[in-house]
Image 1: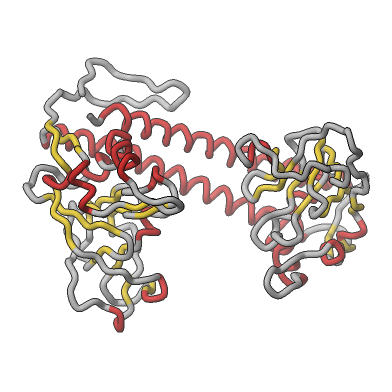
Image 2: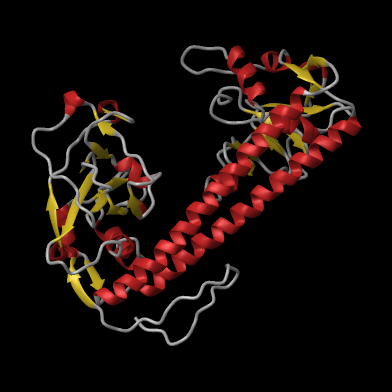
Length: 408
């Protein structure tokens, strides 16, 4: 790997990185690392904020932990005293831990490196592979990024086993090659990626702060209104039904994306029945939700299509003229609304929110002028969150670009 000039990544914040020399040597991963037994403790056997040995669960590798783990700033769960194993290998600075299973081949063998244990006792747990440099060939901080590179994960994808859940074992590392440069070059690479990761974590923290601000403002503005009524006083169900032969886009409501075309959600195939004559028509700014998924989903407002049809199972409605749909949309994000929904969920196996239950929820509606003022304030914060999330995506693109091009 060599470069003799500064690279600029298109459509990403500028990033200068130092010149590197071609001094790489390939090793089998099994030649580089010694492996140690791990435990199989479940989440029920772990607890945060107790005085005990800390335990790395594979779920934390998949979600939550950065590539480089510094325990001065990160908390791991601890093993409850009654479940502490008789035999275990404590982690050391520079040790690597892989997640040995995932439903996604891209995440099999996802790795973290302990760069600073802060004198804490840590062991590797369920579905992890614990490795340590056996020949002092690497510096602390380099391995985590080397094992995050596409050149390594392309090898893992070829050998991961399974159908629904893919897995590997440390024996698979006999088949994987990793490139190792001089320690001087390792330090340059580790320092660069550490700076990028620090910036990513700072960006994530900023986004979380803006989201908390938005949550606070929604609750504050929603509570300071003129008078109280019920949601049923300001909405009306959508009565239009699709007719045979009409050509509407079939939509679903996704937890994360709101309204989404079924063809997009299910990889260009529709799961709707052939007879869509009873499907409900929704138009721009209409709302819809699945009554059986209100506890895990959301009530979506149609903003990305002029219209479409949804399954008859959905509850669809729109607002009267004296209530702006954007105002009601923000109301549905409030903690007050979530608490009121919780009181009205019905059912045993699957909790549901009926239309009557929704209509029974009290709401405070100001005049249209005040609604617009509230929307304007909340839109400003929402747009800031979108911009900061776009910036975060660009930082991640930088990291992915460098992981792809720096490792051989």
